[in-house]
Image (cartoon, rainbow, N blue to C red; front, side, top):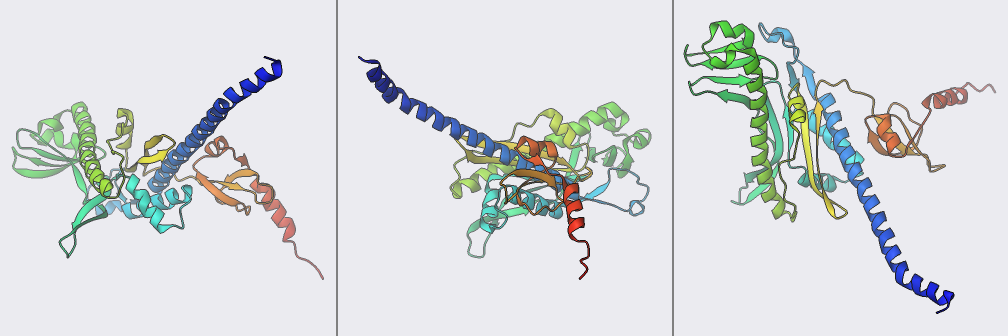
Length: 340
């Protein structure tokens, strides 16, 4: 065979392979980018929701109580903020049906309040025609409860304050663990170290058990809607669990969205006492097509594409920093009074 003939044979044999490999490589890259977008969207949505969910209570309305952690979780505002941020980052903010469908892949949202928690999930309801339907609703507040074999009962909070039934004394008591230790017969209140270990463990365990039930029910609803993915309890590290109960906050899970040949399975946790930072917007200059990131307080007239919590996240996605101070200076020059 001549060299030219060998070259032709080589091309005929290997070109399809190279084409297929490059095609799959491109698919994998696009899948990774999409997976990153979903992950970032969830993290940003949870952080935004956590930042707006708390309202400081007036301490004088709680007689004899001075815990710095006592705040009222505004779960409705948190949910609205979460939904808006998720929809914006997924580019479905103007599509109500798509937003509603998005929640088919969010099996649960947990709001951690000071003395209990709420779960936003699908639940069954009865219609007037004796048919079962379902919709997303908030659960009633569920306390962080604990009981022992002696009949004592304790409702924990996110700090050392408790509401407890002392079976030995036959009465309800409340206060900080250290204050109640000397005048209560409840064994758990006698030792601060043991109390703290049990308190954290019980709060986490109670939420985990509830989530397992909620996610199992979500699987039933999903099958009816044609979603074949099997939703499972996310693998949340013990460190993340314990950090989540340091203060009021919000947890959200997203699962089952197809990305390439895989399915998304992520969670995010946001604290309710976080100081809200100015969001970072990733936009495209319509004149040049260049991607820039800038604070949400800056309005350069670009087409907004994504929202981030930090400039570093935006830079990692290929956005260049936009100098808003230059824009302000330019606007100042343009708005000088014109004398006729």
